[in-house]
Amino acid sequence: MKVEQISVFVENKPGRLEHVTRVLADANINIRALSLADTSDFGILRLILNDIDTAEKALQNEGFTVRRTHVVAVEVPDRPGGMHSISKALAGHNINVEYAYAFVERSGENAIIIFRFDDIDAGIQALIENGFTVLPGEKITRL
Amino acid sequence: MIFNEEFETLPREALEALQLKRLQQVVKRVYHTVGHYKRAFDEAGVTPDDINTLDDIRKLPFTIKQDLRDNYPFGLFTVPMSNIVRLHASSGTTGKPTVVGYTRRDIDTWSNLMARSFVAAGLTSNDVIHNAYGYGLFTGGLGAHYGAERLGASVIPMSGGGTKKQIMILQDFGPTAICCTPSYALYLAEQGKEMGIDMRSLRLRVGVFGAEPWSERMRQEIEDRLGIKALDIYGLSEIIGPGVAIECAEGRNGLHVFEDHFIVEIINPETGETVPHGEEGELVFTTLTKEAVPLIRYRTRDLSRLIEEPCKCGRTHIRMARISGRSDDMLIIRGVNVFPSQIESVLLSIEGLEPHYQLIVDREGTLDTLEIQVEMSEDLFSDKIKTLQDIESRITKDIKDYLGVSAKVKLVGSQTLERVEGKAQRVIDRRKL
Image 1: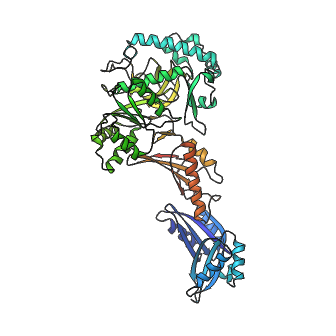
Image 2: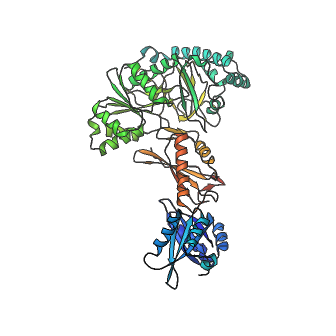
Image 3: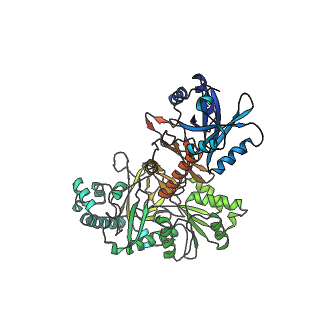
């Protein structure tokens, strides 16, 4: 029920992001979803990829600092109120969201939201109890 | 004007005779009362009886900052704590500061030296002195304060910081003189101007500036912006504090070292050999009259040269040129002494942090800035922004707590900091004084 995400430390300097994406392209890695969080000095690029092991090695070889973490992917109907129904469920269970990012499925019917929880198991349980579809990792990486 | 005409204008011969007599006394005293000196003299194969001329001082071993550290906190004191009336401290090369103590007579000597300094700068008992040196363990604040009172001037004990309040007092109390670091003087000028105040129309006429290196260009700028005469003062807590040497208002070319209380030497920092007068090297001081913590041939790491020619002010005391740099890696940031090694020990106390860092010192406008770039490591890295920002603020806080200096901490990519032949380039000082 968990999806593996890789985060990369990226300095806020021209060319740094280009370097990351170049390494991934050269290693023939496909990016499924991404989010870039930034401060004035640095950013954290969070990626869901089709082949995390190869990507991790390639990035480390180029001197990047990376970290693998587990996140949760939830399917939500792509219509008004979709996101709200999820946040309501999480709030009801007192679940804290560290961060989240979303993308729309190819079919366009559903949106997929990636959540990072402090307590991932409690988060998954809250979502399932409220009838949401939590997607297995392979489903996301093979999209 | 000369505060202590008799001693400040002693003919050289009499001055040197006085120095020799005092040197013999202090050498004898430290040899018999301080374990460190007994050991150091024995190791160098020298006894107090070997000091028969002033040049014999060269037979004595140097004292270095590490010796103060090894004897932390009171190991070099020659008197019991009951005879100490004051303690001060300055930054050491790593965690612990170097500590100095003063007997009642030491405070008296120091007050006289600071009073001499103010008079050399052109001040009298009619002046009102705005003292913006920090009060506390740092010797600047209290040293200047006691000197101002000894002179009989009126002293405003402002201490550092609170720039807007400082400017209000400068306007409302109308001090005629100011003491602070030269960069803070420029900062006051700049902030005052921003507040719409004509800083040249204040009653200030003299500034006594020290505790950090500065230049003729900065002097010009301070004088232009504040409409004052700016003078350079030198001192260090190990020797006594401010008031070891001062520029005279008449000459303004080099700082008179108060030679009846200190012997000054210039050495080659590499070989330890004394260099001829006029040549640049490291300043070395021996205290002649200090009771609590006399120091023999203390290596300051400050670079200067001696000027032998008589000065038109009438003082016979030798002059030292404006400090031109350091023979070690100490940085002076907003008047605070900072060693890269101190920053390193703070960084290494943080778990997961690797010792890959770089210090960037710069001057934005008139104030020094310190940026500490720290390489990201696998152990520190997180996918959460907050975790990384917490690391930055923890480092900033620890640096402020231990070193008393504000720094901007910036996390950078791993292996991005320059390494020269495997050894990192630790400090980049972009300041142009």
